[in-house]
Structure formats: structure tokens, C-alpha cells
Length: 307
Ligand code: PMV
Image (cartoon, rainbow, N blue to C red; front, side):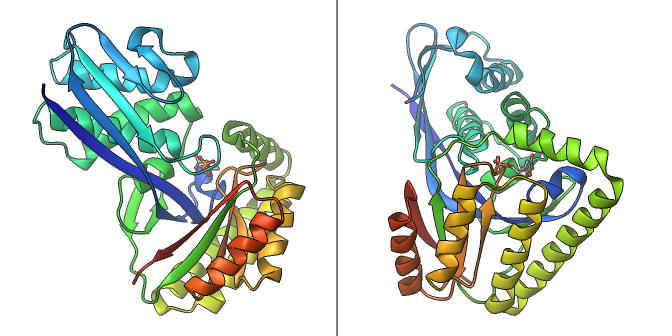
């Protein structure tokens, strides 16, 4: 029985979430929580097997419609609309925590299907299929989740344009899950309502977040992690100002800084989900991770972006 796998991974937004929706630049990092999609030939139907749903593709719950739309589009474009397949999804990425699980799952499935049918897949085609899934999951996504799920290096993302970023000294991060599910569509529309009401606030907020993103890019290029830490703190303050943080995330950010982090902020859509902290060694990252767990973080991860 033929079977092949497609892979992808999680993402972290280092700086620029929300502002990126308005065409501002943002920096995102591949985060090593993995997704594997295994594609197998079977005798009837198209079956999806995963922790969130197992059954025929046709009966997939509304929440996962994006994935089914994406699979159907791939099969029809490959002239395989009647093939019988089982698609098994193994994902280490928690859902609704701003870690890009929906984009990563879609990337892994599309890669898996193309590999199963031994067809070459370029980035543009992959992006178009994954975009179909992301529109269902997120409404009107900036595309940063998808771009990071497709990239093995940190990226600079603006209006769909992607530049790979060099890192000159290792960056040690701690990610903590607040335990609350965020709702990115909701926070994105809340920010829009706030910006629509107050043009001056919008202009100043977007200008400051743009300056932070450019300064962060240059701090990364120079290996100036002290400066990068300060910029992450500033970015968190901006996110508080536009109302997407909450007490739980602010508490975790405070705990990380008290435990020695050089900078900390929420990451992703906010209102729950995850925060990140930057530090200068693996040992410090472990200490910060313990402090965050003691302060009530649901789960924590330490990871390093190597130069
Ligand atoms: O999927 P999340 O929660 O990491 O949020 C994505 C980042 C936002 O800028 C808030 C939305 C977007 O489409 O870029």
C-alpha cells in the first residue's frame, strides 16, 4: 500500500502582529512543534483521521471546512477528484494558541498530497492552496502564518512579500501558553473598530509598531539581543494599547521579566494564547520557563534560533 508524508511546523510572531494586517512589516520565526500528514491509498472514500475529527471528508465539521476545501481543490487540480485516500494528521501544535496550527496542518497536507501523486510543488502553488484553508479559518488572514509554516528560517513579512532573515547570534526563547484559547478573528475586528474610531491613534500606533519592527530587524542582524529585548517590551506595550492583551498574559510577561528575561510580549492574536520571552542562554531560558510554569502557564517550551 502506497503512503507518503508531508511536513510542516508551528510559528511564533516576534514582532508586528495585528499591525501586519494593515500592511506593516512583521518578523516571524519557525517554531519546532511539528505536523505530519500521512497520505495512504484506501478502497473507499476520502477519510481524515486526527485528534479533532476522524471520519469522511464530506462530513468534516464546519470548524474544519477550510481543510476540506483545500484538499478538494488540490485533488481537483491534480485531476484526482475520485481517488480514495486516508489522510492522517499528527500535530504537536495546540489549537487556538497563536502558534499557527491551521496553516501548518494545511501546508503538511498539501505537501503530502503532492508527494503522494509525485508532482512537483512550488511555493506559489502551495501558498495558493493553503490560503484557501486559511480564509475559512481566519477570515482575512495577513498570510504570515502560512509564510512561516513554509519557511525554515526567520522571515520578514510585509504585504505578502517574504524576506529570509539572518541571525548573527543565537536567540534563546521561552514560549508559554496562558491556557486560554485566543480568538484571532475577534481581536482583529476589535482592533479594526478601535482604529476606525480614531485615525490619530491608528496612525501613531502603526507608525510605532513599524519602527519597532525595523529596529528589531536591525538588532537581529547586529546580534544586539539587549536591544531586541527592549523592543519586544515596547511591542507588548503597543499591543496593550490596542486592547489585545489580558491580565493573564500581562502577568506572564511580568513574571518572565522578573525571572531575568531581556524582553517579553504576547505573541499572535492575543486575548489568551501564548507569550514569548527572550534571553541569552539555554540555562536562563530553563529558569524563566520554570518561573512561568509556577505562575500558572499551562505549558512552556524553550527553543533556540541558531545563527
Ligand atoms: O494566528 P495568530 O493568532 O498567531 O494571529 C495572527 C496574527 C495577526 O496579525 C493577529 C492576524 C493576521 O492575520 O496576521
